[in-house]
Length: 263
Length: 262
Image (cartoon, rainbow over all chains, first blue to last red; front, side):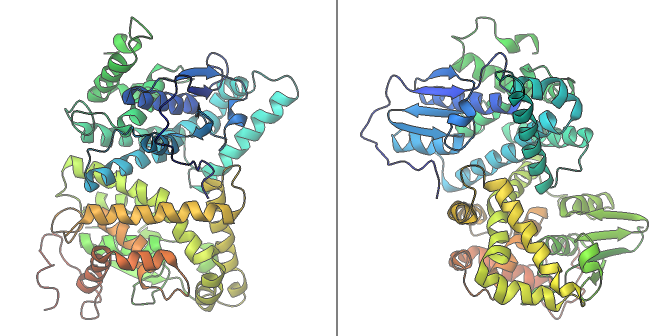
């Protein structure tokens, strides 16, 4: 039973006061959550659906599934990109209607690749690499809380993530192997993208939003080591893909695009 | 060229060379790529509890996990993917990720967590293939590993109990099967006329689900409705694992699909 179940209300239009919740941007949010949030924001902008981004320290606990981000639309709360895509589809907004069955299968497969490789790698680097966990992840994750709650919550989250990594067989990996996996994933994405503007020719789909969210966040986030960002910057078509989406859908945010100094 | 290749895996039943998905992936790939493997089933040995299955031994090298083993075989020049374009290689990675994320949890559940299937099929099978006293230990250890894997990866709060997760993982798995069916279409293999590593992975995951005599499985009935996937499995069994061809090493270049039996 999917907790994000909703009653399709196609009759109700998208309200003006739809909000997206995420953790505090400056101090608290981590790489993986920032990537997921940016993916959802990109998707909603591609659909032309307005949404306000609100930062809350307890966003993770407010979310119905415990995952970031979640959106509050009318009287419904939906979290994670997959259910949000289904939700907007029920309201009549979809980016992948023009795809045939085989293309849709491909799109879903590539989205799983991104979740399986990129998101898992982000979580690994954040929580299983001791240097990053100690210098960045634990302090940031627990910044809104006072002692001793901050320590307890940070270590609890770290333990949860490490348990998950062990369950899927990533527990024994080294950082170098994880970087290599990310490179292979980016190579697959780069080859699939080729010279097209978007993954499925001329129109963006949720896959483009997801890839943009992750790649852009990795490139523009400062970690203990810049190796991950460097590996991605090695793929020029992915860089120009990110820049294109940033300019097309996010240009009102910053005049000088953040990516301009990398291309 | 290379030292002798030896594969440790679980034995076969139900018309399959091995009942274990990951072992089946490696066996299928070795047939597709023409690698001659000596298959050493770990049934009835103490390796049922000590070995991590599947395991490839080549000289001094020991390789585990299907993806690593396939990578090793490719480095030894047993490559079933050499005809694929770069884009098809990328598609392979994506579809394998889809199988891992969407299908594997439901397969684990069907065989190891579902009470009826586990007590009537899986546990007796694995217990009968393990030496005393491991027959008391091996099946339950694998079952609890499967349950914890499902809960840890899919059962995030507030879905703490397995009954709540079940609905989600089965609907994801059925969708995954549908997507594979759309992608395969009417072709014999996923990429053209000769099988590749993606075919090996799909075969490895689907064949046990298709062939096992499960007392109760909605997922199996769903799979049996998808004719092109069932024909895909039967075709590979007939061409590469038939009785007339037990050590059948089909060279990768020949269009073996046309003349399966000599």
